[in-house]
Length: 117
Length: 361
Image: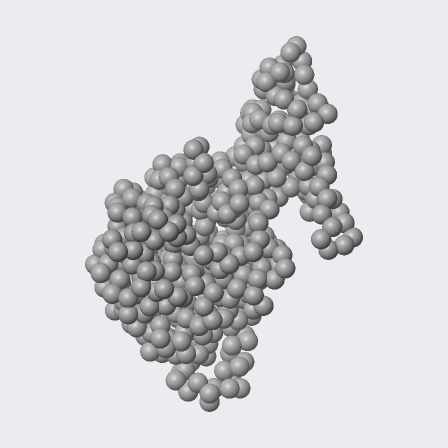
C-alpha cells in the first residue's frame, strides 16, 4: 500500500500534515534535521487526531524539583486532547515506552513525499 | 479501519462558552458598566499554566478565528452532536457563580440571569438536541431560588447548576437547602460541577498534576456534606449528580461513610439510612474524566457500588480532558451496562428530558 502525500517542498522542517494511506489516517512529520516519519493519526488513548496537536519539545529528565529543561524540539508529537506525547522517530509513548503508535514508512520519491507500508 | 458501533448517547456535561460582553444585552443595566468599563472577568484561583496543547480546551475545538472551544454551535455540532449521534446533550455552562468568590453576590446573581437568557437564545432555541441548566448563584440562596422559579417552566431546562469554588461552605449546609427544595418541587436534578477554583483537601498543591489527580477529593467532601446534613432525608425526591470528578472513588466513599455512620450515627440522628443506600437512591456520577480501565476493573467498580444505575456518560466537550464516547470506556463492557451508562441511567433521573429521540444511524 502506497500513497502520495504532497510535493516534497510542501512540508517544511519542523512541521507535520495529515494524510491517508488506504483506510489509515496518517500524520507525516518532517523533523528539524529533514527526516520524514509517518505515524497513525490516532492517539492510543482515546483516538485524538494527533495532526491537530503540537510538534515540539519535551521536558528532559531531571534530578531536582524546579530543574526544567526542554529537549528534542520538533521530534515530539503531543495529542491535542489529553496531551499524550509520542516520539515521532519510533512512535513510542514517552510516559510508557512499552506502548507504541503504529508507524509507516515515509520518504521522498520523484519530488513527492510518499507513505507506504 | 472497522466502523465502531455508535451508542445512543445522553451526554450530561457539555460546555457552551460566552464572552462576558455577550451577556450585556441580557444583564441588568445597572451592572453593565462593570463589564463594559471596569473590565470585570471571572476570578481564577488556579495558579498554573496547563501543559496541554490547547490550554483548557481540546486544541482542535478552538474556532478558526481563535475563539475558545464551545463558542460556536456549528463546530459543536460537527465535533460532537453529529460526530457521535447524540440523542441529547446537557449544557453545563461556562460561567457559574458557585465557582467564584462568594462576595458581591447581587452582581453574580444578576449575571446568572443574564447567562441563562444568553444560553436559551443562543443554544437551546437553536438546537433540538441540546437541553439546558439553570445556572444559579448558590451563595445567594434567595436569589438562586428566584432564578429557579423564573426559569423552571422553560421546557428545555432539566437541572439546576452549581459549580464548586473557593467557598469554605460545603453544599449540604442549611443555607443552601432552599435551593434543593425548589429543585425538587420542579423535578429538576441538581448538578454539582468541578471548576478551576475548586480546591483539594490541601488547597491547590504545588503542581497542576497534583491538583488534577486530587479532583475527586472535593466531590467526596460535597457528597458527605449533602448526606450528613440530611439533604436527602429532607428532600426525598431530589437527585444530585456530581460532574467532572469521575466515579472510581465512589466505592471507597460508600464504605468509609457507612462505617462512620455505624460508629457515629448519634451525631446526625436526622440521617435515617446508611450513606451507601442514600447514594444509590439520590446521587449519580458523571463518567469524565475516566481512567483507563479494563472491562474487568470497570465491572468490579460497578459491582462494588451495588448498582449499575449510578454512572452517567459525559464528554466534557470541548475541554482538553474530553472523553470520547467511542474510546473512553472499555469496548468489551456488556451491552446492557453500556446502554445504561450511555443513556438509560440519565434518562431515568432527568425527569424533564423530552421523550426519547430515535438515533440517526
